[in-house]
Length: 247
Image (cartoon, rainbow, N blue to C red; front, side, top):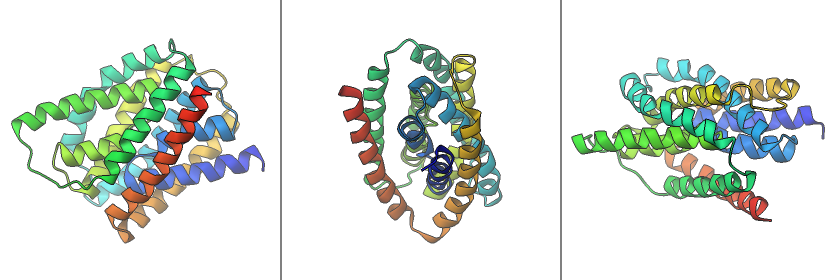
């Protein structure tokens, strides 16, 4: 199978995840770029951020038109992560690939387990607002360090910490992912290696189309069913990445 066909197929799956769940695209993009398309880890992290940013920017307006973006909450949550995302992006260039691989697998597994837990929307308290700032900063650090958008962590935090409904959390997470990804890309400017734009372009285009389909899918399938299905995919990715990092 040609690299172009693989890029289109992987992009469609990643866009579907972003459109339906508001996250998960970045955590799948890096393994796809490395193991399907032969990208070096550093280049895969940068390319993944580019793809996720393009996809979330394209998907955000439709969610906003549906009234599923909490703009003020999203901006504040994202702002807390900008500096950590930038600093972690700089630090990631100095860490061995095996360390990043193990960290990637661990974060993915934790995210999957959180997705499997039922979550209820709860009113926001003052203490929870402080926790939201901490969650935003932590999310930014993960984005910068591992080259993932972080939406798969943002959605549970927006629901559990800030009390958003699941569909509003999905839309708002696209805003958070966009801001954090741009900060992480700024830190990686000039250090992405061979980005192979002839594959990144079709990959991103397929992801944008997949995100539109994902939004329509989310309207027909319950949020719990989507989360559980994607959590299983994340656990499989985590196991694969861990085995690859320690072998």
